[in-house]
Structure formats: structure tokens, C-alpha cells
Image (cartoon, rainbow, N blue to C red; front, side, top):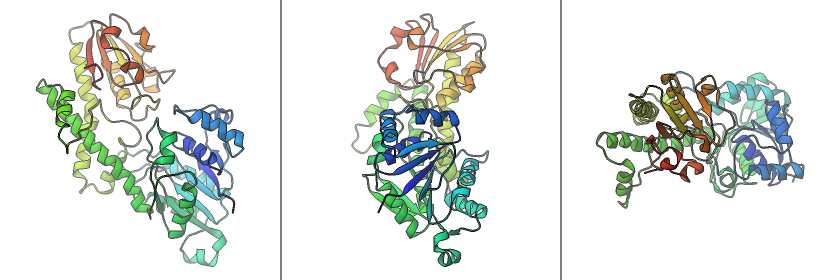
Length: 420
């Protein structure tokens, strides 16, 4: 029996690496994305995101003939939807990208196909997507419905299989991490397991779609709560003139204590977003999760206060901000506290000059591009007379130097504990 063909919907930070890995494990994969420029680049073997090992694997997949990108969805045995899931003002999921994906694939569905939602979503999102698809295609039927029993060739199967990879280690973790397979029916679980077993060496954990959705949110909310403890501890330590990194190191010598490291906030499209989906789904019950989000969301403003205090008596300050990504050694700026802090500094300090260093991008993001006094510079181009040096992201390049080497007389605000 030949391997199922797969159409990947969305070729971003999750979609492109996963599609390429699938192809390199024998699947016939089409990657669909509405960004025509990115599709052209991908088909030339050019990566559109910073991910170690991706370019090599992309070229291998293209050369094998098992992968290509397109701006037009095609018929396939399975569709995997990996599109953004932002939240609304009330922190409920904004389904516009999921619904657009459903609209795109609806015309090429002909039955006996699996539709997997990989996008992180609150409980019942997969079922809402299924309902919408079936509204668009009333001639097709959900697995298990009376119509499906009477028209077996016109059945659609739905599942939620959330990713749980770390940016920067995607190519490895796609293969090695355990995978949750949340089918809306036993047959959907079986079909999805067949696809993910083709490349995933970790355990495939079968459950239903609603539990799979909640599991991913739970994982990231657990991490958010623990980061909030570290971030709150950093504020308490600062108020008591205590080195928080020394404090945490000492506390972590207890055999049952493992406190995480504080930072300027929490970013990325997972930890900074997913807990809100739980809060929106159960607002009365999710008290601790809500509080953790509020603690982490407040940390960038606290960092801004430290910067403004440092320049209080300087007429035209020169400020260097190191890092914009949401974590080290990647180019992903989504929900980045470093971007939020940089924008706030640029807004509050209009009478000075601001040098931003982000080695993994080649132009300022829109949030900063409109400020005339903000410039993206190389690390070596930081002005020696810089008044305030702020480390926001612990990129490799920053870890390899010292504050004294960069700006000998600057006030140093190190939110990552690199230059202690």
C-alpha cells in the first residue's frame, strides 16, 4: 500500500519544517501557502525562516520529487492545517486563518480524506472547523454521522495533532518528540497515526480531539506559570538589592526545586498566547493561569521603567537595545517582549538615539521602522559612548562578548543574567 499523500496548509514556522520532514520520510507532500513570494523561494530551495538544518532538508525534499510548494491547494489523502491562531480582545481564539484555510481546501475535497488541525487551539476548535467545512461542502459527511454510513466514499475524518517543538531544534524534535493524536473518531485517530508514524520516532499518544487541544494549552500554561514565578522573584529581588540569578542558583541546589530563569517577559506564539485560551474557555476557574499571564505581561513595562530611570538626567541619551527575537538564536519576533520594550523606549525617548541589534533579521520590524531615531545596527557598530546598554535576548553573539567591550561607560540593564 502506498503512503498517503498530504497537502500542508501553511508553510510558516511549523508547516514548512514538518512538510519537509514528512517528504524526507517517504510521504508525497504538497505545501500550500498564499504567500507567492515565499512559495517561489521555497521551490528554489531557499528557506524563509531561520531554523538550523532546514535548508539542507528542504533541498533534499525538493530533489527527491516528493515535495513542492504551491499557491493553489490540491487534492490529497490528508490535509494538515498549520496556520496562526491569534486571540481576540476577550482572549477567545480568532479563527479567521483556520476558516480561510477551510475555504481554500473545500473545493478540492472529494471524500474519504483526513483533515488535521495542527494549529494550537482551545477545546472544540477542531469541531468548529469541521462544522464550517461541512457547511461549505454539504455533499460530504462527518465520520460517524448517519450520512457517512450511507455514503462511505463521501466521508471526512477530523483530528487535532498539536506540535510541541522548540524553535531552533525543530528538525530534531519533529522526529524525536512524543506526539498527541486527537481523533474526532477512532478511524480519524488511526489515519492520523499512520501519517505521523511515518516520521515520528516518539510515542504516539491517542486521545480525542478536545483533550488533545487542551493538552497543548496545558503544557504551555504550566511553563508560563513557572516563568511567572521567576519573573516575580526577579522584581522582589531587585527591590531588596539581591542578585536574582545567584538567588535562583542557590535555591536550585535543593533536590526538589528547579526554578526557571527570569527574563524581560514571555514571547512566542505559544506560551504568550495559549494560556489565554484556557482563561477564555473557563474564566471563573482559571485564576492562577490568568495571574501568571498578568505577571509576565507586566514584566516589559518594569524593564522600561528601569531604562527610563537610567536616562532620567541625560538630555540626549544614546541607548543600545540588544535583541528583538522572543528567544535566543532565532529570527521569530512573534509576541516578543523585546520588540514591545523597544517600541516603548522609542516612543518614550524621542530626544535621543536608539541602536537596535538583532543579528537574525535584516530590517527593522514595522513596530520600529517608523521611528527616525531608531536604527538597526551590527553589534560592532554600537556607539562607544552609549549611555545605556540593554540586553533583551541572550543570542550567541551577545554571550560571546561583554558589556565593557561594547560600551565601557554605559549603565547596563541585563534582563537575561548573561553579564553578571
